[in-house]
Image 1 (tube, rainbow, N blue to C red):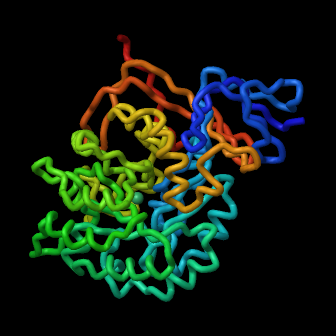
Image 2: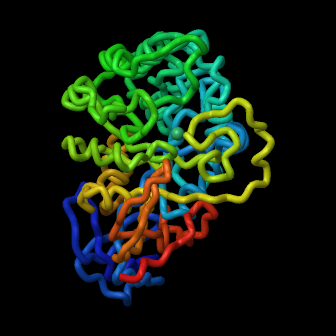
Length: 425
Ligand SMILES: [Zn+2]
């Protein structure tokens, strides 16, 4: 007897090398069977998934869900997660060695979504999206404090969040990153490293992005993750001349990983340049946060912080997201990445990046029943990147139903973009 039977969908599970029509049966929140045809009579409830994709529970590797503590920046974990077709989210740098306790108790333990994090390498954590730059110098990093909070919390903490960008470099060179690397080696967990300008460069200093890359890259070990390769901001993968720094390619060749970290960092022309250079990002974080889903007060039109704006101005502003994790998957398809790779980015590759491949990222008998049921439609669509550049797409994806530990969640999140119909041919 099964509690739930997901019937007739196209299961795509890259880790299991499975792509085809399969039924999935669930008992007590766990997967009990995956077979070509499981009779309905053995099931208490049947979900007809014909015409839908049945995917291992999707994982968003770049979320910001330390709600309330990180100010307007932090979103509700279930609005980013189960209510948006995603079963697991990995917060990037919200909780810190000093504030992790609240993250476990009030976010991870309360949410229906499976919540993980890359701990902020800074004592302050990602308050208001790292808005106040003076908090993020090397004196704000304490290796022992990181080690002592990581040890009892390895179930949730997957690594350390750091930054390698011109604003910090103009103030402290690579000192903050060096200290974070020291901590990362001590705890044996990877760094997830933000690329591309976040803080404005210190007055009177100029930073050569090529020099920045040269100094940062030797600090990265195999398994560390570079984020925002498609950013149009200085210090990303693509120089203003459209060139990809050879040292970045060399880093990928020695096992450094790449996460899209879409957010405000998705430039279609730069993404095309990176993909055409033969680089395939490993994972796909949506990087949704309060400033790119609400009327942005602290992010100006370039996607950077604007210190002159009033943080109170966005209070009560309407949610106006233009993307979601599923939409980002469709963007990757539009860039020419194959569907099985795009699914791997948000399932098995994501699980591996987080060191949770024994628990997440594939559908297997005995594992927790975390499943994302997704509708893929074909048509003529126009997508828009973070800088307003439009580009053509032929596929869209939207969540139909999320199953987390066997429990059903409708895709009702306010953070899902308004669904557009395809244009007439
Ligand atoms: Zn982010």
